[in-house]
Length: 413
Image (cartoon, rainbow, N blue to C red; front, side, top):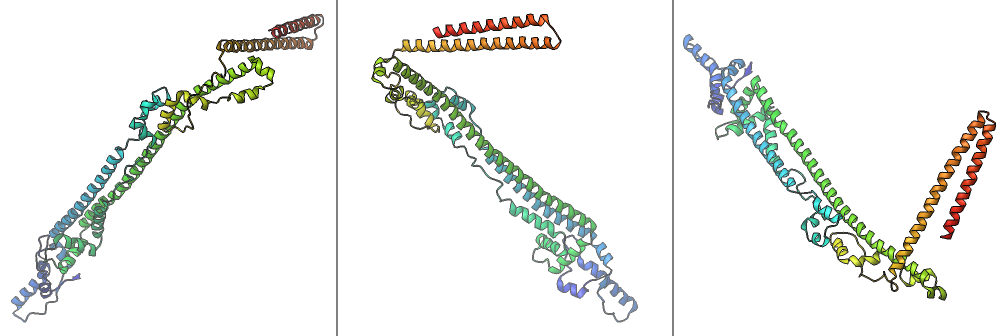
């Protein structure tokens, strides 16, 4: 049993107004008042004082339909807040995706191949894609904007209010406050809803749906972080590939310049050996090379200055390029004589290599024969062993003679 306001108190608090659910709260408490009046009429006696008590279960039963209607309206209101929060969250994620996808972090593979290969560097230097790859940075959104949060927080507040009587009173005031919905009515309606198991189930379901939005928010934020990390990694890879292309091309160009320097230095040394005047005057080869500026690759970059400067404008780290200088001809160049000397030196090197290979082959043959002799002696051989021994000695002496003859031939050359 529960204490219910008597008719006089209800009138003062305006609880006789229609409930939002359609029932009149005065009907429940009026039930006890009506019974008292009927008793007075039949007995013809003085009316007893109205106690103001009514059976709670009868009160709840009388308002069951109205309670169900109120619950449905409150759940719908919470669901509207949930739907608005979900829309805001989805819009924020879609906005992030659009901003992130607009950032192109990929490399221009064709341009990289041209830079590292044999493309015209001067024309590539003016291509805006070169500057993009060189300075590649992700500048898109770093995550979801927070505009959705206020709607999500409101949905959570409404959902959480459904768990307590005071919270449901807040929901009821928000739903029905038209200037005539009193605190007394709010308290009664909240109490009625609190006794309805179906209402409890409905509120639990909508709370779970609102809670799912936090899970969705977590998923979206994790996805956003993954996208940003991937974009930053792509930007780094593009910058790295671009710089690698520059380094590759610089290496190729410097190989050519170094080859030119090597040819100059080789010619200068050879020319010194041919220059009787220098030899007679006692000028050393070191002095001669110093006097004639022994060249490095840097000295020959000037022969390809335009391409070096274009490569530098693309971002390559190149030192002083300088101008083209005539290092190749310290004297009037005798290229025919130089080439002949180079050819002779190569032939002599090849001859030495062949003699070394033949000597190695003979040594291997002698080692094999000695091994065979050792095996026969181990088996106890006699006369045959001597014959083999003599043969080995013959072959060994012959090999020595051949080697000596080869050495004499090499010396005559």
